[in-house]
Image (tube, rainbow, N blue to C red):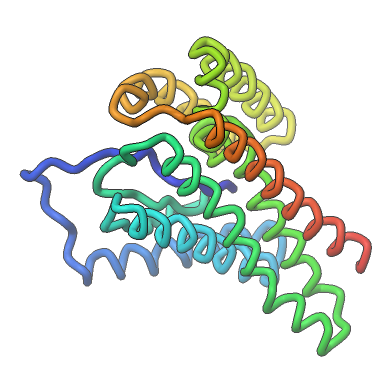
Length: 244
């Protein structure tokens, strides 16, 4: 199971927005399928953590999408995979894209708060499983493999050094992620990353041409923020593991 924000594809004027009723029904059905899938494999606490973690993660993307003028954004739950936040128009600068990508993993960690409080109040270690799972959801998303958030956060920084470096990194990390998925028998995740890698290699040049490139200060900020987000996820995972 994985979560990511979808590529920033602008919608043409001929496209019709789905009705609020159909969007809500689809979100509810997808959420229930996701919860059932996680619960069947890992238990109901992890199922609750997965759905809440995906929701808060995507709300983080959504907040930045709308704040930075790329909205209105929408959240879609993807059965058995997680969720995606989509935007009406692509960012006009690469740095805005980096901020949108990192908002999901950073804000998504807030979903662990209820499970931490429940553990403190009850002393039941099962709640730490939810904390651990939410930390892992956001940590995995920081991997620079399409279509995960890490590819959008680090991709522009790598491209500023050399466009070929970004493409090589996306291919290598994508292959490694698919190999790990096959080894761990997470075939849906492997298929998701494999398709995302192919799609990113086909479309990334188009988005690069439309967005203003990173300045040196923005490059340093992008790499630094990615490292901070990575550290925060690891801290949450370590705390959950040691407390257990």
